[in-house]
Length: 461
Image (cartoon, rainbow, N blue to C red; front, top):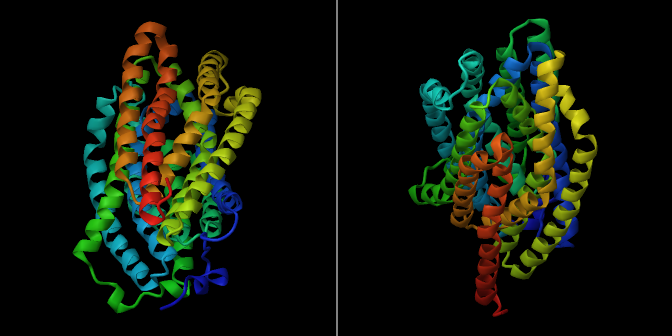
């Protein structure tokens, strides 16, 4: 059988079972972080172009249905990340033949999931927009935007699965390049479609789908050139038990993201009740949310791969060392981002605002208040990502799912209760309380799981 070492180096993989944990996690995260920044760049540009060119109503229309879009993205990402856990474990154990079978069965499942999600989202879009109490004056704009994004869900699934395969093998560089290509493409097409062709929000949505398509193609072209992943006819055999194992990993993560999204939709429904200007202000900050957590998401991907490979290699002590290193790196990063956002957040948010003075000034004030609340609580979010991802890499997706339920309870409870006490400002605390609820589940869960692994492997207390 091939050795793990044979897959490193020029083959586009990265073994994470040797070397200083902090260095491995940081170096693996940096290209992912750069890729996520580029991904967020085109989200930001989408929003800025829509806000500046099309006005407050168009900006509010995007924000009013943002959680619906996030729901579908979360499901695709959940399945892809869940499937990649088993890939990382098989790669770490050196079982490369089995790795290929895991990948092909993941492709079967991802195709079925993408088809079902596309049909369900298109069929339920109008009902969902109505359920969210989207203001009548912006509802047609929201629907036009969603129709195109939902039509591109198979492309989103293809990219997420391809990127997950590369990350499971320790390659964060190729997904980075894919995101750079997608980001630059989206930015150019935003200006062409929205400002040049005057296609409105449909142009912004079309630019996003085309950009995602290019990123998926790039990752797939690289995967087929990795020698260890040369798929033969014998690899393309559906296995019921293997598919069941993959779904046990992917389904809880998809469900976790679904629960989080439903909580977000309840919050959005309440936000929509405060009017178009309030929606626009919250939308501007929510579009920066991705930049706030961009490093946390990258560290999370690194922790899934790191803990999965080391579990496959039976190196439990390295898992706890990596967890400590990841938390230290995350805390330093979150405090740095907090300082940047408090110092320059108002200036950044102004990019999204249209020229008309009255509504723009009101929306900007709302946006900065919300940004300040989230920025000050960023360390809580970073603990969530590091801990949840480490647990997922260890093959347990049920406890992270439970943390998603805790997020739902805290987010919806705060959204329903706090506005009664604090008015519109109360809704701004729902998100950070959701992070705290998840941490209260995840931190004790990690300690419990690690203790059990130590007792099984080497009798450590």
